[in-house]
Image (cartoon, rainbow, N blue to C red):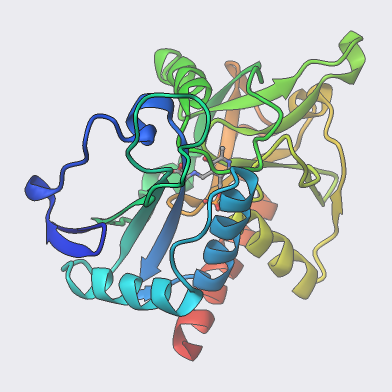
Amino acid sequence: MTVYLNGKFLPLEEAFVPVLDRGFIFGDGVYEVIPVYSRRAFRLHEHLQRLQASLDGIRLDNPHTMAEWEELIQTLIKNNSAEDQYLYLHLTRGVAKRDHAFPQPPVKPTVFMMSSPLSQPAAKLLASGVSATTATDNRWLRCDIKAISLLPNVLLRQLAVDAGCAETILIREGSGSGDSFMTEGAASNIFVVKNGTLLAPPKNNLMLPGITYDVVLEIAKANHIPYQVRKILKSEIFDADEILLTSSTKEVLPVTRVDGKAVGSGKPGAMFTRLHMLYQEFKREVMRKS
Ligand code: PDD
């Protein structure tokens, strides 16, 4: 596997960063995950824009222009053999003596990129759906930054694995029991379907603005599928007809069980089937044009 580190393409086994890298010491950095279909990066511009927003969020200058990123990404894709890949981009505030405050003068950021083969979600998962568990969203108040410091997400996601589930749906607890609301998954965005309407939580500081989330809403709009972007109460998860999970690596997946209870009929529903088909069409169309 060929990776990129600080200006060089090299085998993964030869890529090392010093232990004083602020990514290692403080988790002081941001990342992106970009899907590649038939060797073309999907929604590249949007991913690079979100990367810029994450960098702005942690006050780290972008070391590359958009054109430079595009070129580096094309070379990374070329240097790896899979037709479908997912790219991982990782930037940290660089290597400096351990001190919480930013290094002065600033040091060079560390830039790392790798590619892994991307496989489509297994047909079995699409046919049966996946299970999810719920947990209190105990993360910080800047979940819109795609930060590499993912310890809360790691612990929350492990709750799902411990319960034999695919994902943990996160709940911000309100002051009263009736006003707790859903934010997203530990590593995905979550939609709820009720009476034929697709419900999406509003993008704000409490969730990652998913690129797949945007694509799904774009598809809903273009195909006159009723949708609403609004706060989704915890109670609505347990009263949902369908629940959908989205991410760049999983695309759109049906969640058919939550906390051991069936969602709606307990089977992937009509909204999932339609959106999944439209998503595949959308991908093909974008790839054909690019
Ligand atoms: N995660 N919310 C969180 C917390 C995520 O980590 C992700 C994706 C998403 C979905 O965003 P997008 O549609 O842009 O992939 C939402 C990636 C895949 C990861 O960390 O591996």
